[in-house]
Image (cartoon, rainbow, N blue to C red; front, side):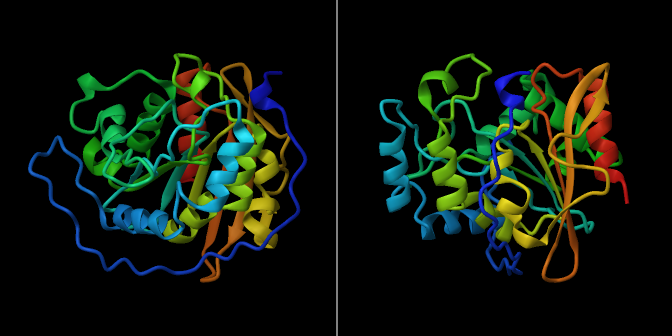
Length: 291
């Protein structure tokens, strides 16, 4: 079993209460369709990062010290929160582990803006420029499967994408290596101490969360991240698997009941890297479209 599929002990449970959020922010218009137009929700998340403040908080500074002698890159924003996120009642959030290198644009903030880069990687405007990284290739197919009646740019505006860990260990993540070089203290500072991903959950209010993380981050998931509202789906748990083209795919399903009474379904599965594409896409798409 690969290091990605190993499991650590869960952290002590903590409370996670999804609060309602009002997005009264005007959209920023860009001059070219090939440039990114920040959605109201993306602007809201950037204001959230500013308020933490992400990248200069004392926990961020402590995290950088804890990672030495490894060098951390700058925090990376969420990849995408579409302008039509939630308009059909579904609020689908995809999350990876971390990014590779210092990705995104520098707009004078302590964190980098990855939204335009994500449009490029997913092939929003021109599928011929679409990169073949499994994380983006598989996710594009899943999104299109969930919204078959929409063009891809329209379907892309229905979903959100982020990472669990905002800073990247540079030695491995900036290379072509598929290894996740995040040291445990870095994940702990970001997820358990500063709780950036939990704050994103508060803001995004997803109804479906798909975590492409394997078992490496399980100690931060389940009740440890979502609090006492977390429940495993019947018959599921951290060691559950699903058949995926003849391979065993990590497959942990759970649910969190939000304060407004709407359940948030959660799936923690394997990272798309090295997984057979068609069965992987079908498994995740079927889960997302299941009532």
